[in-house]
Image (cartoon, rainbow, N blue to C red; front, side, top):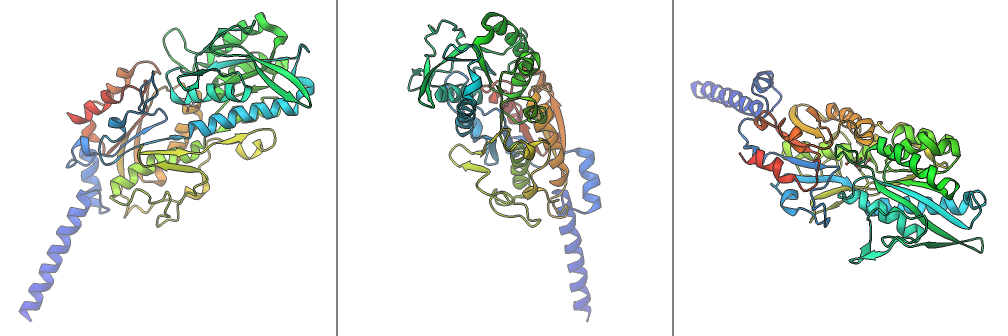
Length: 430
Ligand code: BGC
């Protein structure tokens, strides 16, 4: 009898101490969570071993495009989340080409047999931007090869068709041959150095339209921020189809008013993946949980919306063209993706603290689509996220705000310059 009581007491003591242990690791008991909020993140994991996700701007060499493998495999819980840039770029090019084919009777505004387009480039050192420039040139037949790939440099102006970074293309539509010319292209960077700058694009279309007038038949751009700025400044009134990328809500709505189309990069899937890979690493579960394999709540993605490249440690969402035919399905770009919209159980996925930065707080896509989506997912995944907004041009402005990484359990990083991964990891190595 005595022995039995002792046994029970032992079991109780053991049980209690196990529970205490669990809560220290971020378990569910009250004692644990109040302790955790005092000292912030999990104090017993070294910063260099905490889960890290790069997103939206893939660590890479901004001149050669080569991936920064050291950054992408910084520790065993490091990933990148973005989208399939080449698939999206091809879609964008094809969308524009199909638009031209379908509307050929009204495209050539001055009737000279030359279909002229202008192109707003986001960031010449950003792989996604480069891919989109190439995608448009490929579909228009205006690309010129350089080192085995289509040259993605801006041409400045090319009204005479003599630029060397592009050539005149030919499109045969309804038995008739049309010349296609890139009349002008420019990186939309403001004087302070911020790229993808919508205001710069609004000014550029002013200059271009006053020099080329009715020669401009199509306006193409690397994103909707630039596209909408040009649409509002000029193309809407002049009924010139304008194309962007991102499927921000304002751009989708503008399709009803003549905006030519855009591409959804499935930001709803990317924002989920960005936080989900951190969640899985924090829970110590298989990285595929709630991604390719359903989690306990039933969240799961199908392979028509993303791919995973193990060697690049990168998740890439797939893109979808958004045009007059289907835009009604895309009117709210901040709506979470239904198949991954279920709340996680806090007893299995305890509250954790995440440091996350948006490299440019005024970037159209990031501020109007991506960040609202992240905010919609963070609660569902039981993550308490501190959102840090940068100015789009100064890396130190952001790294300075990663002064105390020990307060966080995990990190989500959106760099200003894709070459700069080491300025973040150096802070985690300390
Ligand atoms: C988006 C752009 C955005 C950029 C920021 C791209 O994926 O399409 O709109 O400006 O990310 O890095």
